[in-house]
Length: 83
Image (cartoon, rainbow, N blue to C red; front, side, top):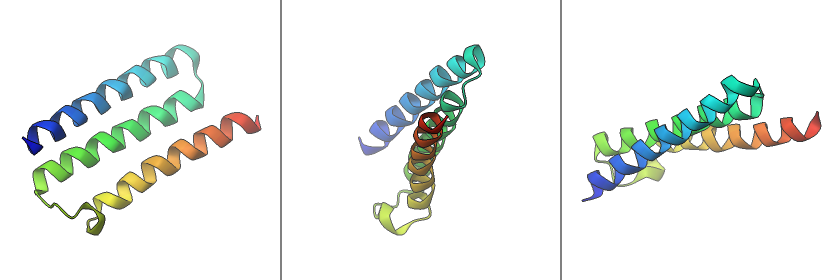
């Protein structure tokens, strides 16, 4: 069941990434591009965790990929508000 849920989260992250990618293509706003990349990273994280079957996700390299995704979201928000 855990693999099924990880797959569903991976698919949802990919759909959200495509959603933001479409808005980035239409508007050219960097915020949408950065959000698309961060949700793609979050989906890759879940896929990697599902394939590795490692339950201690805090002790894996996937934690750092997720950290980079959230850091990218924070950078995107700061970048949007500074302009």
